Length: 399
Ligand SMILES: *Cc1c(COP(=O)(O)O)cnc(C)c1O
Image (cartoon, protein in one colour):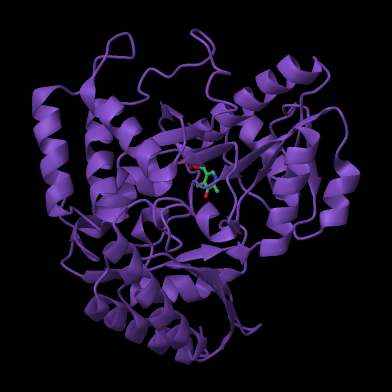
């Protein structure tokens, strides 16, 4: 047994044995509590990234730890060949909060979107025939890393290798109703959108456009699928971001924040789509794992609460104002606790983020922007410490 004591030991082992698909920050996080973490040398960090929006309750939230630990001691897994209580409790809770009818559980955002895409294709075939299998997505979208969800992702940069991709996707520019109208014909079974495009820069879709999409989909009997993998579970200040747009999509996918850091994804289906999947149509060995589900039930207990959501909105307004006044910040986009910061030309987001991490602030980027997604329950005091570090880093023009 090797006892690891220094960050460097972790870096070396990782670089030697883990496939180099990530350019990691130079920080090895050892432990955390709330919105604060520590590395192997005792250096402290404030968390403005929440593990890319997953640690919705921060690090090691007491009640969530309790829910997870008590489930893992009782029963960790049975496969989907048997009934277990945590999955059905979570599904019931999700349906009651959102008004949806049925849920399918997988393990990730990409897997949730794969499920939604399968529903769309089967639905299309059943109502309009085999030719009705095409799906429209938006330019600059992000829907995952599997071959099919890469196809769904409307960014050329993701379509350079790994041929052949799944056929049947086409892309239209966001916020352009005419382009969408022009793209629709009898071969289209669904439209998939993110309401706030997270990975490509925290770009918020405009409300009228989204309402237009919903109306068009209704008129043409096309499914509207909203990818809320990043925006869902309170991130934007309502439980679902769709609520703020006044829309009721046929299918919604969730993942990131739902598990508070354990892997889980969910496909929510409305009355129209709840019976599209029949026995044998879809599955996932780990999907609906009791430990992840027991933790997610605790997430819903805390997040699907009026006061908790209101607090997100207070913190959002506070942070928006402070972020807008930061040196070298030219624009702040986003909703709730999901922000994109445009920087003056000479400050690269990547370099700025490295500087932040070095200074004790865990932060994200999204294309050319800095991206901020703190745990939903971050305290005002932690916000202020984080903002001070950020201000100092952005004041330094010699990044
Ligand atoms: C992160 C993300 C995904 C992919 O989720 P994974 O869990 O990494 O598969 C899909 N859609 C959106 C909007 C995301 O932000």
